[in-house]
Image (cartoon, rainbow, N blue to C red; front, side, top):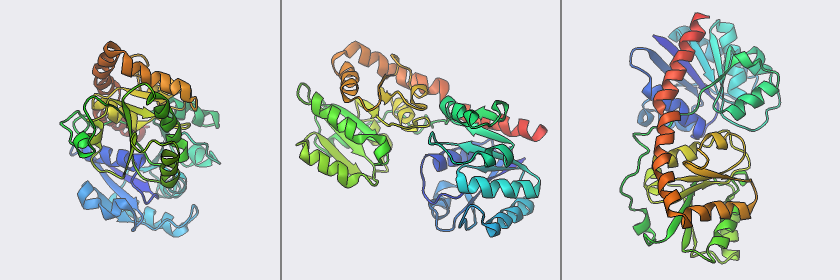
Amino acid sequence: MIKVLEVEASKGFGGQEKRSVRLANNMPEGKVKTYFAVNPDSVLMRDAEKLDIECLPVVTRATYDIFAVFTLVRYIKELGIDIVSTHSGRDGWLGGMAAKIAGVKCIRVRHLQTPFASAFSYKYLTDEVTAISNGVRDYIASRGVKKEKIRLIFTGVDTKQFQKRDSSFRSEFGISNETFLIGIVAILRGAKRHKDLIDAVKLLSEKHDVKLVIAGEGPQWENLQNKIKEDGLEDRVIMTGYRSDTVNILSALDLFVLPSNMEALGTALLEAQACGVPVVGSRVGGIPEALEEGGSGLLFECEHVDDLAAKIEKFIIDKEFYARASKRAREFVEEKFSVEKMLEDTLKQYEELLTK
């Protein structure tokens, strides 16, 4: 059995943490055993039982926290860990150093498109780097990491969980079935460009019966609320805050839009398509890989509101195109981004790494 230690310095529960939990929970029984080394006050530690994962406490105060390193070394030796897997700057250094001291393999998973300050940990503290999109892989290689050291493994979507179901969302907010409902489920950060989507809906509302759902919370909450009020769109835009019923929301949508100006892949696009919802995304980062242009969705030039509005309008007025895109959306995810494919590729990575 392969024993893996996922080292996670983050205290939140975003895309990278969800991906790690998805891997751990779906690995073939008897082949892989996964442990999580996390901060005691993290969401992963708090919800370990609910998430069905085994967590080990490690306080990660800084990138060079020697106490954290030797705590990790102790876990590695006591549990007989074969592979350490890291995900961000702090745990990349701490987990990488611990793996070197303990003499075990180390994988660094890069989830983000954002630039990083130093490539040292990628070059010298890891045996292999996992990129979740071609865009991420190309950036890592551009920083001097050998291409043969970088492995592409797309993030997989649980298509059993994410599938179209009966939804109560429209009735909850009094939205007619005739209204074309556009949605985005994402943290409210400036990089997600929610304001561009609001501007596009303002243009579209002059000719069409459209509404926009913004689900999520984050630092842009107040700014977006003020913008909606200033634009007179209170009857067109619904901000729900955090919702745990993502599938319920996606199942109610006619179209999902992700207008980010930086995105490693765009897992939210994949989850929407798995629910049979066509998508529109900005032509940046890994987003072009997360949809099939002209098939399951359309791309627009980032921060060009007129282009965004035009791409959305294509779905509103071209009923045949919309029907084809809706059908293709689910097929596309099943073909390229299933959990099964991610598991198969990751297990192959583990096995090959340990036989090197």
